[in-house]
Length: 112
Length: 112
Image (cartoon, rainbow over all chains, first blue to last red; front, side):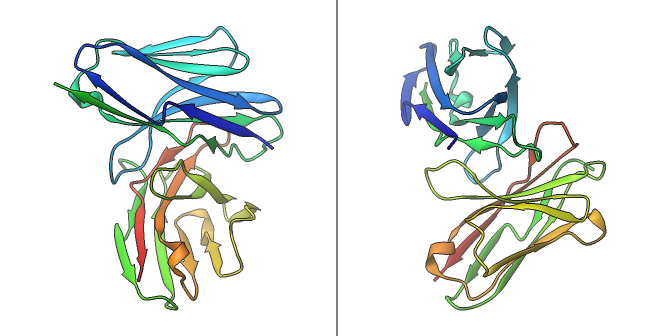
């Protein structure tokens, strides 16, 4: 069974304090790994898709990387508006419908 | 069209009542997905449609749940004889056949 585990469950940072969120996965045939941001009371908002080990993508203060077993979301000099839950999800090769299997998320709080 | 729209945003019902939610996907998207998310957890896949055909259902989708997508446009998710365990955020997403999923803001269901 495909499994996605995110750590830590919660993370508190001071504004400007860089850190990384982890997403480890055990799947049969990864087609893509997705990162989403979710604000309270809202649906997930797409951030990145990574397809192969070694791939990196950046957007503002966020950088996502992928290895064969895990993905990292690096947050550089975070601001309070980066506070949210960050979800990772996998799409597997035998999945004709593009369904995503999500991890439990990391709740990030950035204090000014 | 600015995104996936879900209605209502919030629903409070008594145990044993039936409820129905509506999802309007991004108009060009042929795939539509329903997910359920409980507090502190990542979204869990329930079912998906390609055009009007329901192609896959999760084992989470008991026989009290039914989803339709008449004419391949909007979709409805009905829960019959609601139970307290059905309390959750119900998320709808849409996509092209091989594209990323775009999520709506969800319907928060509370069963009293």
